[in-house]
Amino acid sequence: MKLNHLFHTASAVLLACALWSCDSVGEDERLIEVERAEVRRSVLIEDFTGQRCVNCPTATAEIEKLQEEYGKDAVIAVAIHSGPFGHNSTMNSARLPLCTETGDEYYTHWGIEAQPAVKINRGTPVYSSALYGKEVRTALEQTTPVDLHLVPLYDPDTRTVQIDVEAVSTKTLGGKVQVWITENNIVDAQMMPDGSRNPNYLHQHVFRTSLTNDLYGDDIRMTEDAPAHATYQAVLSDAWKAEDIVVVAFVTSSTNGGVLQVVQSSLTPIE
Image (cartoon, rainbow, N blue to C red; front, top):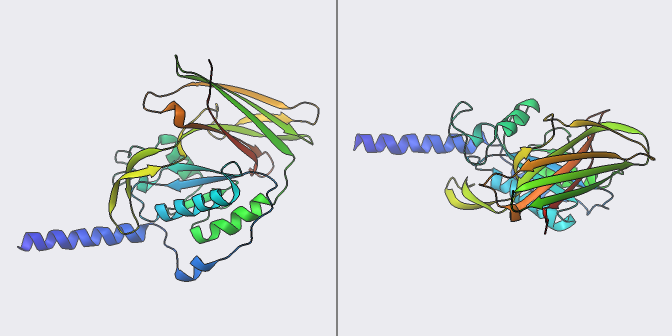
């Protein structure tokens, strides 16, 4: 009986720690209302999440709400499973199925301090999902001189993807281009806000890998008369479903590192 009591007590303590380890949202923050934005560009949301993060599904729901309002091509989200909640216990333990080494590197590089957290167009991390709407609205209304075109061709026989990116600018600019592979409709475990474990949670826009030579982008230079071009090639893992793969490409500024434009596309099979 004493052992049973100790087990329940320890479980309660562990659950409480898990609930408090993720960023929580106060009641006063949940009532923030924002007007609909005038969409002038697309916005990238880097969503630092984890399968052990109990508050992350709430953040995901807020991102999906913004995508429903403005469209998935206007609000492009990438779920970067990483950090302590992407691992079984600590950063030194085995990664959970959706966590990657690259995701962990981004988590550390950007100085993420809690989960859920998002970076919107590579701005300062935002830890309260109640603020996502305001930040996204501001980003959508900003103008950009850059237009992106993305063509990902897929050979089903070899599972090879060739990705062509073209960046056009109305003025001379230097920057970096990044190309990521993401996957939708992944059924896997997720801790939920009530502390329960959902073994059949549907994970969307999950970061799989980066294709650029540098994890933080390859250098490009754009002028009005000379668009920048970049080509990448990859072989899809057998564990990934080609029909659910989405390629995300974006260009960041060499001046401040902010995202100048972002675009996404499903694979186009070569017949």
